Image (cartoon, rainbow over all chains, first blue to last red; front, side, top):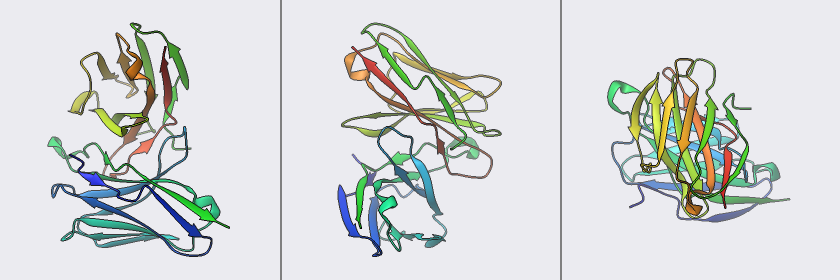
Amino acid sequence: DQQVKQNSPSLSVQEGRISILNCDYTNSMFDYFLWYKKYPAEGPTFLISISSIKDKNEDGRFTVFLNKSAKHLSLHIVPSQPGDSAVYFCAASARNYGGSQGNLIFGKGTKLSVKP
Amino acid sequence: DSGVTQTPKHLITATGQRVTLRCSPRSGDLSVYWYQQSLDQGLQFLIQYYNGEERAKGNILERFSAQQFPDLHSELNLSSLELGDSALYFCASSGGTFYEQYFGPGTRLTVT
């Protein structure tokens, strides 16, 4: 059973427009959410994160929104650039015993294509 | 550059063999995580170490084991390799009060 779901395998957006990537989760114990960007045969690159005590976090062109009641988060990229084309993974985490961050549970990813 | 290093970058070996993958975390990070990415499975958590101690286990096969050494580098040992073990293996690290995990470039393992 997938605890983190990204229901859109792909998304195509015109350069300069907004890209919205969505993610749903089922486990209410998750207390931290992250977005990663990944190119083929490379490691995931951390983009932005949000704690469960917040509903929005912004970093430059990237904004993550969290709706806990709906167990939904989204990543907004404004304006989108061709260099943003990559696979985006949503991930969630909960603390394990001892208080350290637990492992990440990843969604399957959404492939974003930004067209010039 | 995430600051996490992994060696080797590529590894080709035969079924039944044993290999060791190495990871050096970012300076100061106490936690190391291992993930496997295969074509049809996405990124799957294998195991976590925190300051030398095993902290959590995911869907790690009994043929796989790991350890974290006093200098905080970690090794993932894969034995009795099967064709299905062919995958990208990523190491990530995190530390302190920060929850973000930073990933290395990965080791691509091909079992023939």
